[in-house]
Image 1 (cartoon, rainbow, N blue to C red):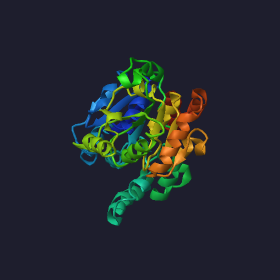
Image 2: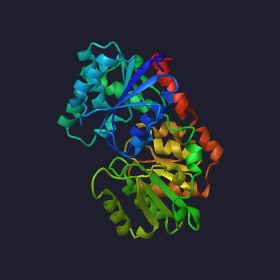
Image 3: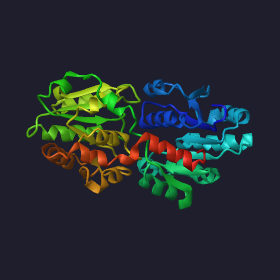
Length: 370
């Protein structure tokens, strides 16, 4: 590996979300071409165990991006990487500061995975300014921003003021070479083995962003016409998040048909056996769970949230799009899709651009490492 170019990847493992999963996928693919140093804050959670053995993990002592500036500076001075890829906004700003301190010539690329305007919509004016102003000041010092969808790209240009040529779209590295083998692993729950009732699935952290209460209400609506079961894969960041969702199911009278098994290291063994996948999010960047469902040939319904579902489902060509928070429209779309699903082959067509090897190659080409 000594002759290979060196790429530093900086990320905070702040949970079991999609960002962590995408970065571990990317690093495994990057390591096929370059030497990869993964600078990890708060290394933990289910995705940390998925980091490939070919990736050199540099576990930082700091617990926050800003307090890690000194450690990142020292790394840059000692290792002199050829480029740095940073996941998430705060880590990106910290990396640019560290690069200046180290007088490093390594270009810093910041990967943004969410629609910031939508995420900040519920915040007060001062909180929005506090988040956006540093981006407008610091991002011009980066080599570029990599957005996970065209919607995120447009929003990033609006928020940061960066010109179009500085903001690039590269699709998420969702579909790995392992996904089919993982999907074929043993059935993880009796509901998926004994298909006496159709199984509907949602997947993601139990947060306001994912808006599972709307999915629960839509699920309750269809029970008289389509008795079924609902599985919500994921864990909440706060104690009691799972219990709150279970209470909603009890209030709706569907608790006996709803399962919340928590975070699953291999969600594909569950997802591949679903009859329908539903994305109920209020906002996204490019929803990985929806992409994974389509890659496995699972019929899907999604909210038309900013950003990503419009692009992935091609305006409704590969699955219905409904208004955010509209459980009545979601219920109608769920029934229609269960009754007349698209073929698995056609659904897989929608996500051909989301292969991990292709995504990683585009990152490396943009950073001029291959």
